[in-house]
Length: 96
Image 1 (cartoon, rainbow, N blue to C red):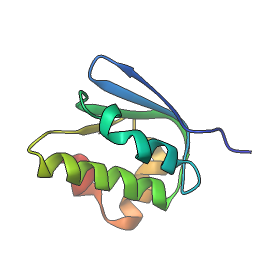
Image 2 (image 1 turned 90 degrees about the horizontal axis):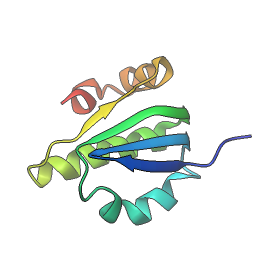
Image 3 (image 1 turned 180 degrees about the vertical axis):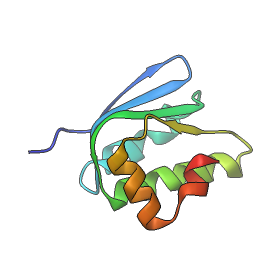
Image 4 (image 1 turned 90 degrees about the vertical axis):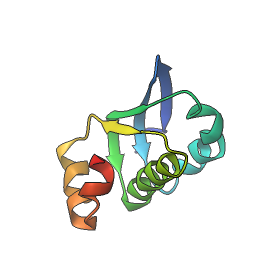
């Protein structure tokens, strides 16, 4: 059983917890404009599972920030997520 996606903001960091997958990301996506308004970092260390749709969302968020000349860091990347990032060849996007 997966844990629902949840988030909490502390200062300029948005902490994601639970599962970030195709079933859970729409709730976040619908609120992203407000949630990401004043952040510069997304900490994903609390995620227990990320699928390819979840990774695609993170890549898309990085692109949206870059398009607005804003910087977004993604921190707390687990070994499993690091493997997924490498499999999809998006290391430079996530690291930039």
